[in-house]
Image (tube, one colour):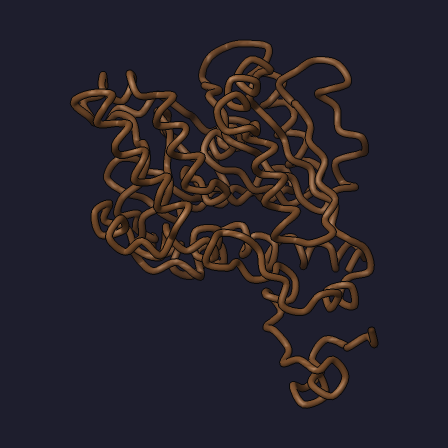
Amino acid sequence: MAAVPEGTSEAACVAVLGVIPMPPLQRQLGAVDGRGGIEAHVAGYGTNIVSRPPAFLVSESETAEARQERRQVTGRSSGESFADLLRAMVPGAACELVQTVEAGPAGEPSRDLAGYDAVFLAGSPLHVYEESPAVRRQLSFMQAVFASATPCFGSCAGLQIAVAAAGGRVRQNKRGHEVGIGRRILRTAAGQDHPLLSERPDVFDALSLHSDEVEALPPGSTLLATNRVTTVQAAEIRHDGGVFWGVQYHPELPLEEIADALRRQGEEIVDQKLARSEADVEGYAAAIEDLGRDPGRHDLAWRLGLDEQVTDARSRRSEISMFVRHLVEPTRSQRGRA
């Protein structure tokens, strides 16, 4: 295929490729189809844009026991889910998994952190305010990520790890658990101007599953989104030469995996008085799972009170797309890799 330079006109692209060019973000990340998969609109076109595929590092903060428990239900650990999504969103990307809560080789990346184009922190049941070797290793890793100046994105526990590593505080959420759907998340004034949330409306819902919250952001942070259950729903942290963008919710997860998590935590959800029985939890989880399998089920979306911000895969994952477009790609260019 002939190479087409960035900025080539639509007419020229049609002449060379026989297709109408996609916007830059679509060329780089592909388009998510209505079934939650990835539709490659211009196969091979992306190879003319970057000099080498991006190298991503996905940090798993789940213990070995937690990873195995999750695999038994969903077939994948949290980090494996994240890595699979990144490979689909950024075709050709090299995704390396590292178990940073573990001592020894499994907890060590294969190269210097500055050698990666981005680091992603997956969610986990880790409580960063608890003193343990696993927590200390995770915080030490995140401090090294900041020092490397490699862009970093984290969801749920990933946000909390970055906060604690930079000097902020995390605690158990005093308003209770936020499970299933995080409702009425509001972009702050800073969030309205920030690229991370540039494809979100002022108020939106998102998949959520957490019992801890950020109590205090560290110096050098910007609050980007909030709601009445969890004060810090999205934030930027600048620390020790590095930049982290993170969210408390889960843009990386499909609805089916949220449904699996609800079933695993059924007893806890009842204890929190969010449901009257585990049978109620099962009914709610089943509806979410069915909607994930068929996003066109408007009856289920209506019953659950959800719109395209949750049901449409492209919208649901927009924070990850924006992170790659607005932070990872410029950094790759600065480092001479794109």
